Amino acid sequence: MMIGKALTIAGSDCGGGAGIQADLKTFQERDVFGMSVITVLTAQNTLGVHGVFPQTLDAIEGQIDAIFQDMGTDAVKTGMLFSEEIINLVAAKLQYYNVKNIVVDPVMIAKGGAPLLQKQAMDALVTKLLPLATVITPNIPEACEILGLSAIDTISEMRLAAEALHKLGPKFIVLKGGHLEGENEAIDVLFDGENFHYFEAKRIKTIHTHGTGCTFAAAITAELAKGEDIKTAVTTAKNFIQAAIEHSLCIGKGIGPTKHSAYRLNR
Image (cartoon, rainbow, N blue to C red; front, side, top):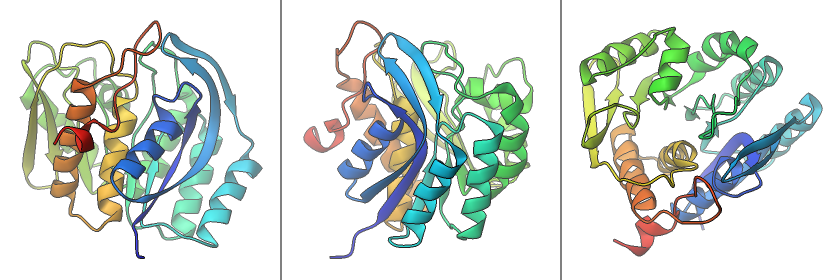
């Protein structure tokens, strides 16, 4: 049986709501074979990130080589990479193995505010990884950090930011509008270098959104692994994460996770 294969290169969330765990759940739900390279172990739950433990470069390289020298993959998603050294290694390996579908989720800050990307790693992210990306999926705060902006407050400013991000090298930009103030809908903007496409969904009033960024990017990765075009992939991912948020889980004492099976179970 032929099946699409998707690899996530990211951090581990022992609480199961984000990171590697969220990615693999999403890959399974979208009917692709999921594989993982763990870059960082985190001690994490719904109350926050309590410890960050980067893996050695040898451990990360060994995981990547083991996958590409045997199974290979149809798409790769990067999440929490944490340091300049890890970003440089991952970028070099993606180039070495000539990976075609690369989804970069520029993970920088946890929902609870803990930093997930060292400040000195930003230059490596921008110069080494973004130019390799098929698509990047920043939220508004992440886009502001990458571009050095103080704020993005309107859809018009989202379009300008998407154009600026595109100049950094990615083929497609998906700028997520969940942080946009005063909107009744969560509007994401896809820019392909020439045209804009908009993906709208009703804003859900819930605090339980842990892992939404990871899950959304993983859903895009899964669809690309199956051969879908970018607009179809983002459409499916938007519907997938909307269902996951609508049926989010009240697990833990803080910001709870979303329900990864909701899209399948509630269609």
